[in-house]
Picture: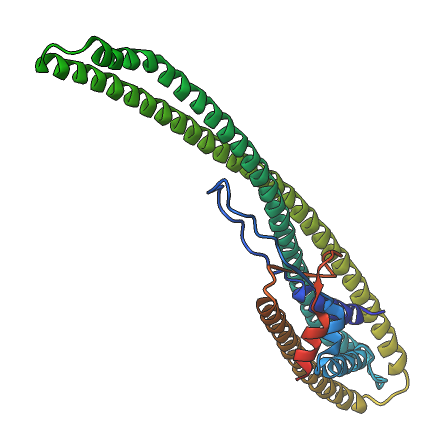
Amino acid sequence: MSHQDAALSTARAWLLLALAAVLVGGCRGRVQSTSAPVAETRVGVVDLQVVTRAHPRWQQLDAVVKQLQDVQAQLAVLPPAPAMPEADVRRALDEEARRLQGELDKELAFLKQDGERRLQAFADELRSEHASKIEQIRRELEAQGDREIVARRDELRAQLRAAEQQIRDEYRYPLLNLRLRAEVAGLTSEEEAKQLQQQVQALQDEREQRLAAQAGETQKAFTEFQKSKEDEVNTKLKAAQDVMQAEGQRRLQTRQQEVQAELRQAAVALDETFRARLERRRRELLAAAEGQPSGRQGTYVESLGERNRRLRAELVSLQEQRARLEDSIVAEVKIEVAAIAQDRKLDVVLTRLVANVAGIDITTDVIQKLKR
């Protein structure tokens, strides 16, 4: 397979990679309540390879790719050249070298752009994977925190009830003695009755103040524990995010190095192809120069240039047409996936190119929408 054919195969692979985007809801915030329910994430799955091949314009795109291959094959093969003297051979070789160098530069630029697309798709996949894992960790940490908060609340309530009972017991007998004094011993004057009532009220007020203070201390202890547990959950969540972020950066850097290595290998292969084609063309020109009239050489160069200009113009037009078709297919599939995810209240939509997980398969729904 030539480097042009390899580029076209890469273009098809990019069309699927460009669609490998995952819709993920962001992490919710810190723990807010000990009784708030944790919403279950609804996951959808779509087979993008099936969806894109079912798109109404997929056959049109495939036809354009085949036309591109045909044009590139024509450019790769030169028609038989008339004979020409050594000087004309050199000029023809120089022109051929410039043309081949231009094709080489375009091919390298395309491969670089394709590598950037693949890196972006991989980065999107990493972000989706990171968000899913963080959401799972957050739910587990919040559930554990809720259990510990509820247990601490029940423990503090039991301690508060015991403390309140102890305080009431401390004041029961002094209050009872004052009441018995008023009932049994009798009061000699209104002033004595007033003083006795004031003593009873003072004891009651003191008791209520102590009860209120005890309740306040208990509430404060619970609030502090709840806040510390929320801080603990957020700290652990942040630590998990940092670890996954570092791991994601490491994986992305590794993939970047792999793509760069592929690009360097492709550049070496293209350069070898360039030199081999140029040498082969030189031998062809020298062999054809023997015994052929020099007057045909100018006509051949002119016709060859015209042919190459026509084919390159056709190649540019087909590449633009392919790009438009790819962009439109990507855009329509993304829109339909997002619309179905919203209608079916899905929080996450994963592609089978990214991960094979259990979820609601919306592949058929997307295909039906695309065919309408």
